[in-house]
Amino acid sequence: MVQPENVGKDRGDELADKLMLTRRRLLPSVNDLKSLGLSLIQIEILIRLIEGRRTAVELASEIYGVRPDDPSFEMYYTRVRRASRELQSRARLNTSVRPTKALQADGTARAGD
Image 1 (spheres, rainbow, N blue to C red):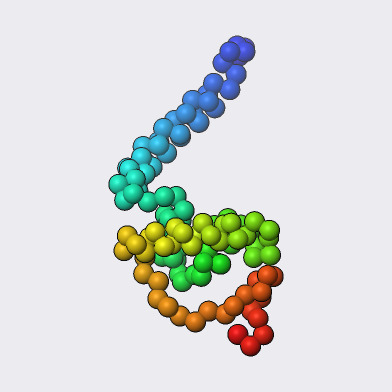
Image 2: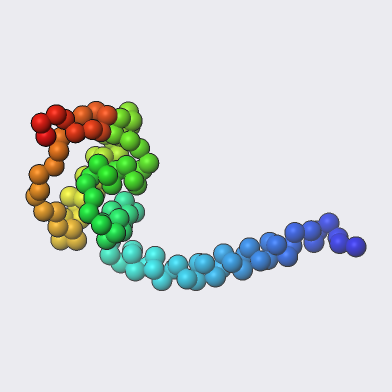
């Protein structure tokens, strides 16, 4: 018969082992990222830009899961813009100037743009 204090112990040990293994795998990567002196949002921006070109609007939408018509969108958009500017100032990101379409509040392009 299984003793009450041992119920789930094997599962707990298995979870602890998996967490320790994950920690050992992630720790070197986390230390590498720390040595770069980047914030989490900056890292996220770089990862997404490695995958392909994105606008600040697209980055804010993808990273924070908000749409341009969301009342909190401007706050998240501003965070992305600031983090992008900081990356530019550190020569970690180069943004080329290219024409973009002006967006209405609902995220659609304005007529004539």
